[in-house]
Image (cartoon, rainbow, N blue to C red; front, side, top):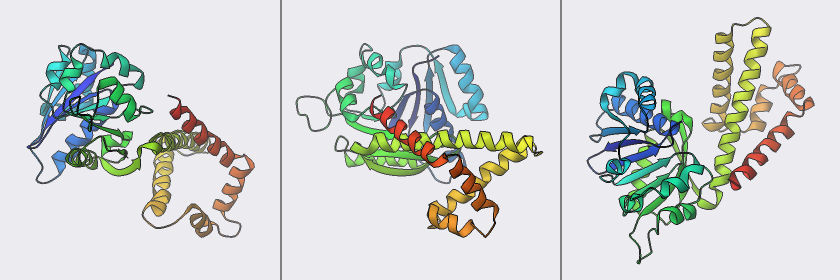
Length: 296
């Protein structure tokens, strides 16, 4: 399994590199789709760096025809890839941070750059410790640090991206970061002190969705629906209901009231979930996710 991959793009204003894995590939695919389908955009050049030939083949397969827009490279000196960049996006597993920070020459290669971290559970203070002092330290090169958590929906330009409000990056660097991730979906800003909690809530929602849809589909198949029809129905229904709360001004309480007709299917389904202690189980899951993230 590859530890580090790299994606680079250049705009008229910035050069951006990614040190990443699966999420980095999702972000690259989302950016390619956005720039293909949008109107006037900054001129962009992409370079993707992976550690092995097998990873390169997998990346090319995932990109499909879009691979023609990307300079894909396997192996070699990653520092030569990141040195020309104005910004570096870190997306490898959090446990790899120490080994990456100890790569010969990496501190020099990162000097003065915008460093955007996608590492769940890793604070800006930990990044500064790993890679050097940041903005405001006159005795060290002024690097800019931002902490960003996108969702896998970046692949289809439907990400919910969390960005930590921090004084460790300048206003221009924050604008560049916001622009990148706005191409991939929604952007929400949180204080650094709440990033672990916000990250955990998003992860718990993903877990809940996967378990719920899996159970709905399996039961639907057992009762006669085809698997493809059940999957489409379940996911479309979830999107429809959540859209009313996201864009329609409704709350869970008002949505339940609106959908609960006398002797109706929805209210009886709610009661069955309550009988199975679904709400306490979900609450426990969210609390566990938050505590787990705080201790990563």
